[in-house]
Length: 456
Image (tube, rainbow, N blue to C red):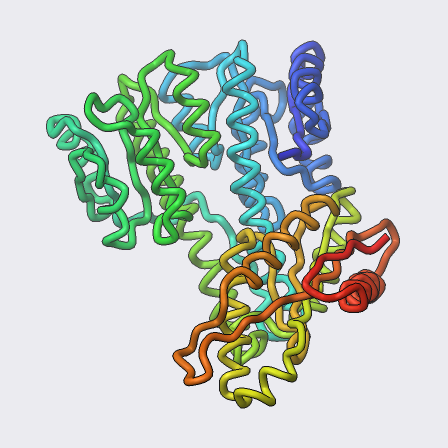
């Protein structure tokens, strides 16, 4: 996953070194050599992540971080402090200022790349929520009051600890007194399954358990629908970089290194709880204000009005960032025959099941909508044409390979779908993109149906 990374340091060789490392991994790198310059670049360019030196003359990194997090327009941008300071008190100061992590000089390549990618994944999710909220505000279905990631807000929540050592758990629970309700799972193969039994706000997993694979627990937590978006904080031994990198690559949000400093641990826990509250608030705000006005009553997907409005927002963002945006336009083949044969009530059931299958086979950042009648559209940000074609074929096979069974006297209903794929071009409008996808869909229909055609 690529991203725009801002490197801030008053020492030019340090900037050049990080710039070279990140460019080699195909990141788009911006640079700044002072705190005020960094704030100007952030306001103008809106980077995906900031690597920020602490020790700078005039305005130091802590002050820059506070200003980034105090601005509603930039508060969601992840900030990583890059510093020679290694005292826990310095880390706590940075975390309290809103920093998402620390990297100690000299920066190790594996830790740098893994941390950047992990935080960029988080920002992609936050950006999608913010974009959907912006779309709602523009349509008049949402208040325009800013939702800010407040670094000073009180924290509390349900925290689950997965560790085999009861003595360690007791120390952690004591350190978290006043933070919230703390539960404990003593490892085991079913540790991740037990985490699904309650709505947790944070899960802390030890990666040093003897009889339980902590990475396996984290992997399962990310695969279950109930725990997919719950923050995970892992505990790892000092120096075990390879294990830490694997954890971050599979979606772990944060980590602490043993021996654990109590103040740093508490600060990281509070940061994750605040971020979870921030995401929950965005989701709640989005759903409450737009659910009725933007969803299709039959399928539960977004309706055409919301799709076209949100597509305008996403295409504008994609063109500014130079990224691809693809759409799939789908039409259920011979759907009139389903209605004529089985009745409109059964036809609605087919539409609902069709929508459910589509929803299970696209990403969380994608958006599926009922465009009208038996036509559906899936919008896929940051997706080139070849990926969109692959996803389209996967959806086509998912529909065609499994009959729709509603316990009818006539038996199961077999359904296929034709799909047109189009990818945005520079200067193109949403209406033009939809028209291209519609033409590709027409070709799929004319070519025999049950196929995917990509617009030229």
